[in-house]
Image (cartoon, rainbow, N blue to C red; front, top):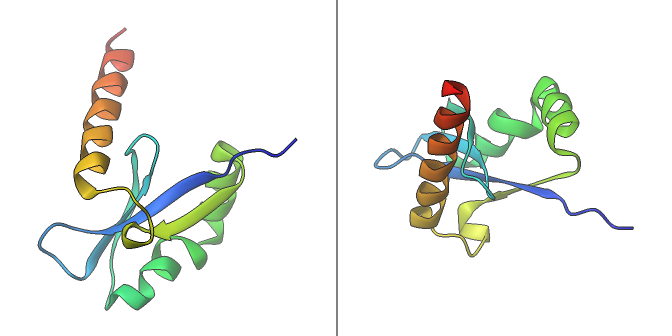
Length: 96
């Protein structure tokens, strides 16, 4: 049985070409952000060079695939919408 990979997406911050974020594509949950000297370092700074994150997130999500948003068909607007929904659900769960 093949399990589906969890897609994590790297996005540049709005209006900033050196601040990058990594989010869960399905929910929009923000996992980390980093000030990078260029886009070329974003993958390594946010994920590839972070053994502790790889371990933690693999334990949490299972098999992971990491892509830049421009490598997907997900728009920033859709990702922001998912993030808002995730935040509202999290806020409700914490208030119970």
